[in-house]
Image (spheres, rainbow, N blue to C red):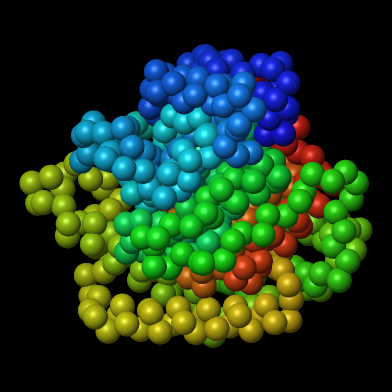
Length: 462
């Protein structure tokens, strides 16, 4: 984004020039991946013209003024419809922005369009009955991941430098790993939300970007106060300065690394393991101290996570009138059916188990500053499937590395670390204690400078 600000400042180009170029690029290339599902060029260009006037007057609103951004179709945008990936919603414009969108608007960002999501964000792939499947820009026969797959694919295709996504079980980190971009799951309360999400503290909104420094700048904007959210932190975000040239100094930082993260791992992949393990020497070179270690979970995190996921689908089904339920993605009813024997005691036990898991995570981060681990056990798999071969669509036990941190509420990030021999991207996950987003971003920047994979572009984007 620094290049955009420099161009706006000098008059080499304007926000209108950039918006027009990107709208044209989306129109030309989006059919290859189906990432952007709604454009409103007149609104986009109106925002760009307003930004251009501010830059010409020497009064930009923020570092994001004039920066084009896509927004996942789970966040409300004033004046735009919101479908949430489903067929139940109509084209009625939303009356107000969600807090994250409001912060972007206040910062002068230019909204390019909405990106694809599975209905309600309920899958680790991005496929819906509303607008079909989003394909991986690196291999259109593979999934882009989900549920922020539209945002990730749009970034990989060059449809702008930053995107707004969300993460309830890995939905920022999973597609970021599959598409060679950065996805940041903030700690619970870091980015305000409204209205309250019944999936709290699991689900949060966060930035995605081609580069770590851009994700950091966007997170600073998203973290601005919001009085309606009782869980929002009253503390300002300490934006790390990632602009200085040279190596990032991580001296004194204690980093644990683990191939399995203390979780049951039904699937493993030698290439993914090797790429993730290759992160350790990069961080040692930056001055960090590395030690192999994993959280000592008091129970398998999949147990309570399954309860929360199932009960969320049960609630979605309950709130949908019976005559409209056939419009829902069948996965919602299928997952809800898993809760046929659930009672109040099941949910209360899951809440108790989540507290024990969070306590174990907190204890782990008294010994370490960060944890390095996989995002996904395998690279992107074939389109047309919700899960890899051998696993039912309703079974999430095969990807155990992301959802524990939604239950603990801690920040976590995916940053590109390499490619498989088949040319598929792989990300590495960086997890920290509550409030550790600045350190996580600094560490991700160290990795990115050692391996500037953002400079690589998929053939589909050409």
